[in-house]
Image 1 (tube, rainbow, N blue to C red):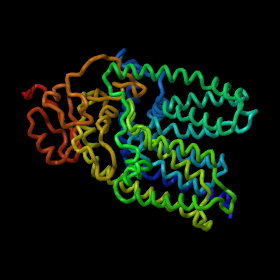
Image 2: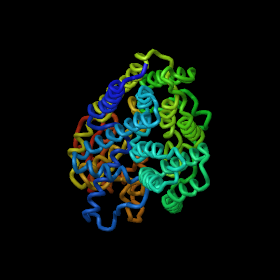
Image 3: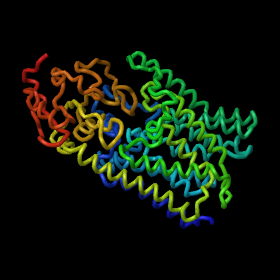
Image 4: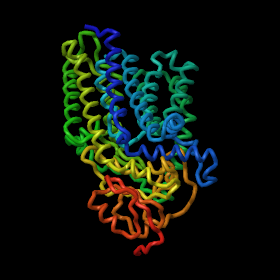
Length: 499
């Protein structure tokens, strides 16, 4: 039984609705780096207007900036927090639409595409890796643009499109550009293209590749001078990544509880059933090329280091991509047509409901007091962000790590840490100085010293009620709001602060 066009449209509509619902139900989405990204956009517009002189410059000539230009447009259309939420929602929508577009281009089932769409709610989304997430639609475009015939492979138009897409991949994230080159090489080997075609493809991407090498060598030298750890760190060894929890977290890894586990088990049933069947009754067999690309990402996800340069989850961020391509590459399982249609929808809707419920609880409990704290911070304050809670019972990772940056997003001023300090965003801080306060407090608030508060106007603190009761006794801190996990304190610099 062949699924009709109307049924395919229904699948797309259901999946898109399920993807959007969690974003519409909360004020703050749990995306760790998102506040810093939004902070970059405020600084971007201020810098263009000359507000920071030569202290801040726009980083036009590096990767990772494409998403900032996108968010900068939304900044002009929505309030700042909403702009960030809409940006992440549209990136998620683009991810899902790209999955369906790849299925259409490769002649794969939309039922498989619906199931593969669950991997949009992966660890990269929860960490707010917007620059990485936005690269998936362009990578799908790259796959779709790879010419299938010899005449197309070396035509001027095909090569021009290849160059344009290579530039887009690089501007999204340097890792996506590297992945695109690897896939192009693999496809050319598999398709046994002529040497002339290899040469033409090499010329098409050479300008971007040469600039990427220059950029990377410059970045490596700068990191060494700044004292950053540039070595590769595995964290977990390859075999440890197959342990049940680590394995599951590699593909989704955003929510605590049984919801994600059940969804992954259901996806596993589909994959196993697909592997046990060579061809479906609609003659959709294995897409060997997608399977090869999927295998490449699986290998990287399980063998590569987990941290390199400033990039965390260097390896595992590829596993959702690998899983998406695997599901698309396989034949349909030997389920009844009605089951093949309903099964993916049930999995997608289940994940959407679980995600929405967890996000609502996260906003109500874990971010209690945040809105009130942000509203009482005076404009253009120097803000010290301290997170003593660190881990959530609802969201995995470090969901509060960069939350304090909302102070700069909404009120301007300065922070104790900004992405502009290590050239990972569109704005770069050119000032060469060593601050007088303790560094790394965004990661390790427990290292804060009383004298650190002298450098700031406001302390925005995430802590338990018991800890807040202690902070309230400090003579150099004046509470500005009294309830919630997040509270703002005025730093009284004229008070006696112990050294």
